[in-house]
Image (cartoon, rainbow, N blue to C red; front, side):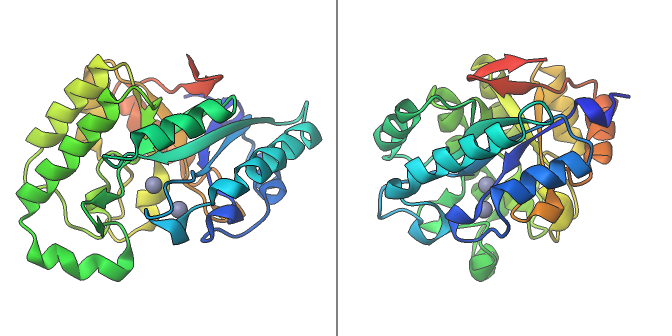
Length: 263
Ligand SMILES: [Zn+2]
Ligand SMILES: [Zn+2]
């Protein structure tokens, strides 16, 4: 068993996204208290103004985000490694905007997440009724086609919360679309965000599910641990369980620094 002392939490938000609480300093303090070796802030990146604006920092807040993380980095130096990352969105048509933001600063780690199917924010509890109007097989085929696009885009280091449409309990009818996406993710040499937030949601299962964790590990895909914390109390959430699931699958845990993977 890997000691929790060597672990990083590489999926953390900040209040700049408009739906997280606690200062970045408080997240760092919580990580120290949880015995973690490091953290990587990955707040929701700016996107074109027409896309999902209330749920992310604005472009004119990006410098403030970077400065804030740098301050925490300096304050905790020697006690906790603090890295600078982003949770990016993959939404066809926004790639050039995303590319510009990714070039603007020396990021350590960039997660690529799919949060929208067309205009529908499918992980937003406000719009959960839409699932009743959808064919689940078709929904998952659409979703994983976008995940494949994210993997092929060359923009990201990992794929965020792989099987996210299960969040409210709508599990995939079969794993075939997910397995095809894992083939693409492996070929593109991306990692997976092993995201423990699923254990806090109605589905009560981390992303990815145990069967997909095994399928990913079998393809040589490694995992980046993330709590997806939107509050300091969520930092390092259920990391012992996460490690158990990854190790049972024969998977490897990695982190990213300077957009380079480290075992
Ligand atoms: Zn969020
Ligand atoms: Zn996300």
